[in-house]
Length: 220
Image (cartoon, rainbow, N blue to C red; front, side, top):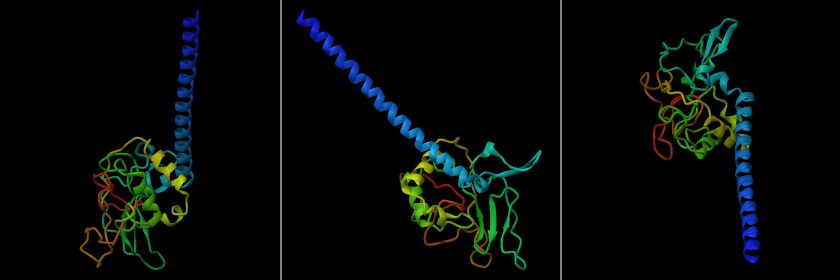
């Protein structure tokens, strides 16, 4: 009789432990899902698609091409030299809103998708947070160029920046190598990568490889 009692107690304890393990796992998944949803919200209201998703002319006028969501300036779209600013005009943009020219030269919106070779696939969350905190590529490379408003994003909390990165890691990876930024005419040879003391994540590529290896994405 005692044997059956102990078997019953052991079974009950195992069931409780299994249920607790399942609840813990479900809680972690729920938290992770909540973080990603928070990141999606921040990316949406922050207007990331406005510059990092190419625009096209649709049946009702300009619209974002969501089949290339957050993939940056299309590598197949080679831009001619930017027009010289005249009068009060100091900047120009491509029809895709992914190439921008001004006193800083020409910058191209970065690929924010998790593609390992051309996007953020090999970035760490630390790379991402430090880039937006410092305005430098991965926190230590070349300067992030206009029109990327990294100064505004630098005021976000660590939790929100990490949520943005978590969401960006869940979107479809798109292979799209964004061109290097082009320095202003007269500062360096045209097409040569500017040798700024350090760099960031928003619009223009290059910089040092991310921690963990791999090539960084191109773009602002």
